[in-house]
Length: 208
Image 1 (tube, rainbow, N blue to C red):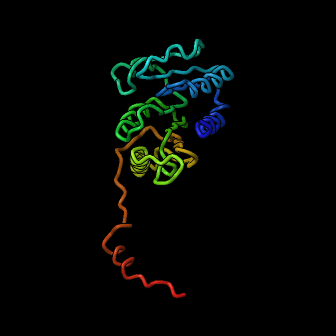
Image 2: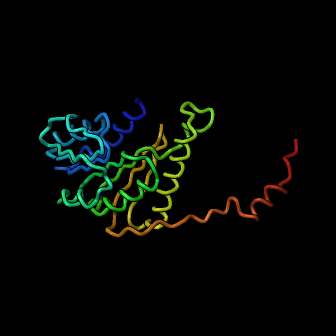
């Protein structure tokens, strides 16, 4: 909980001066991020649209809030509801790399130039063996998500910037700088190339 609050504070600091923001939130759950976004909207005369597959409509009665009860990949439905470009996109729904890729590519089109995109749960370090959140499944999913984000960035270095906060389960911060978005590009990793394996195998041991 504390780590999530730290991430919310980080997001709030980055968006607190946006005038009349339109914020799109994918994933509501208990409404902690919803509450934070509404604080910013109340202060800066903004509006929040939240999407969740569960009925979270009772989370708030704030008139600045619009809740959409739907899966966030129901694009035929949701895309017709979002009629304006958004300043902030928060992706915190289904934490699975293919789903994140799918919603990122769809909603990227709705984000303004210089708008911000936040993706939660992108770091695996707390979940590795013998760490404080030891969980093999979450470790694997977060690793795959991290790699997917890097692959997308690898093909879009001129289209958005990427920063990753490694605290807790991690947070990716993306700033849109171009309307274009290319399909992801695999990263050619030489770490496990035959040449490097030979180097490691024949590397002399350090002398005492």
